[in-house]
Length: 263
Image (cartoon, rainbow, N blue to C red; front, side):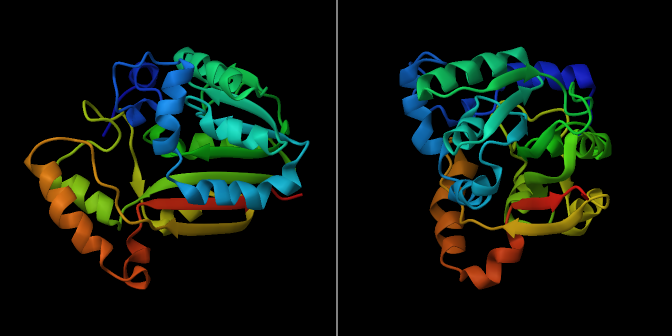
């Protein structure tokens, strides 16, 4: 998959992360009713909040940058745990949603429109940098984004970069051979890179204490329609979900990185 930086910005300005969780399209986007509607669906990734509970005590009162905040749900979760959050995104549309979501939650943060490839912050600005499901979508070559994460982190700072897509996963198999979009029903982003664990870990060779974990979860039923969706919901999901996790864990869809910038 290929494209330009401008095409990527245009895509994400109309496909803000979080919109894919909307089921009832009669609800106006960005309203309190909308956030109440999507929160239960968007919060299914329980391991994210478990990770925050593990990491937040050491970051309380310290500065964290989220790259690609989308509607701001994860940034708000960090803020609710006492972390000083700067929520950034490539698109103004996402930042407007994020501001509304923070108001809905009664929380505060700094907000910034900036690209992961050229973060508009001085060197060594943050104690932690967090991103979920974002960095692999930034460009055909994501190494400049990783270099920017390294640059804006303070010495000893924490990098929590989650949800790279795993090449050797059940999801990628279905995407490749089922010919279905990954992100949104209507279109995938111009860049949507898929890697092996070894490749992802190699991107962080400047860092230390690097851990790369394959995040396995059993598939959720899709809300998409059609024959392929029916086969997925009624055959693949129950059959795959019956398999022991010890057998299927290596084939999880997400790869999560935790690392530190050398002190």
